[in-house]
Length: 425
Image 1: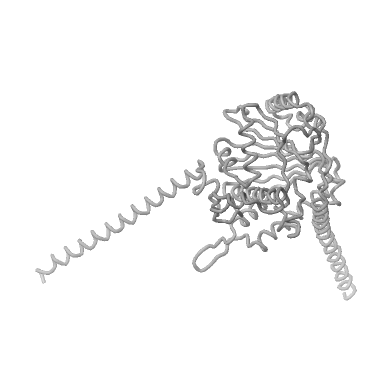
Image 2: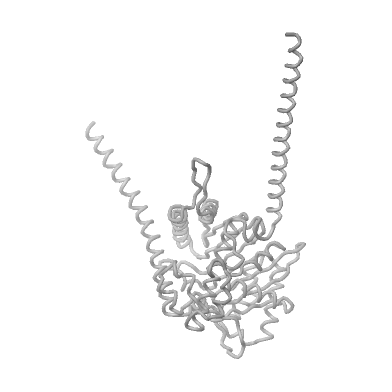
């Protein structure tokens, strides 16, 4: 009996060691990924090195676009049209390299409108004036404070130029939108979203140089698609691996990274609702929203890819939009440093009336109801919610008035009863 007991004990101990070793290995793998990614990104920032892209004529070719958006022939035709127009206008674009491509469009009555391609990379012809920017401000707090003034940029990694392909009559509108985002003005995008949901796709044709070292050989392409709506949004990220073993590795790393991100938002940034004596308290609303995004995300693994799907309601989208706004503000501030060596007086003067001192845009309002909602641009959902609140308040007021009227009548009945009983006494 004692021998059986010790054998069982040894078996349980061995099982515990194996399970503990497995989870320890996964934790170490996530740590190695995070540390490797940090060191690699820091090297790219400090060295000013530009990652290599794919030839522009290949990324913008009909076959490549058909491979990305083959399930949407109308979109492919629109993109072909604007690409052909851009290439015909400036043939030097064919000799460039693209490290990232952003495609946006809207649907009105099931018709695609305002299709545009933002090609980020390097283009050899210097006689043309293109939109380029140079900063590292966003990573000041994320990586190392000393990087704030290094003069190396996130965009410097992706390339020197941003070239916009769009319909000729929409060029000013698209450039205005891009300029606003790069300067931390999120309202033009918010207005566009309310007018009609914005569909988007982000493609990294060759993400190996941006990936952490232990994932570099596991990723072939990263493809992000989604739609930004005024009240409901969704996004899907596909990590193309091309191999079942690579997919399993990326799937495990992604799952553990999401768990680590959730822990960070919840515990470090206090991203959860607290129960107090006076009621519920949400100290850091945006962190709570990010935790909720992670909790409701869905992860799938296929033999050749790993897919992550997330959904957003209006408060979650506001948190994402404010993150983009914050990044744009840092880009603008650091670009000012890079161009003048110090904060130009024009930049300071432009922000003299800014209540946040330039940290946020002048129109920024804290909370989950801006830029979309009661404190920003009204959406169908926020209008309906406001109407529901007004109706509930009116019903509550009517119920209170009815209760008060009933109490008054009850007092009158009691007084009349007392008056009727008095002579009899």
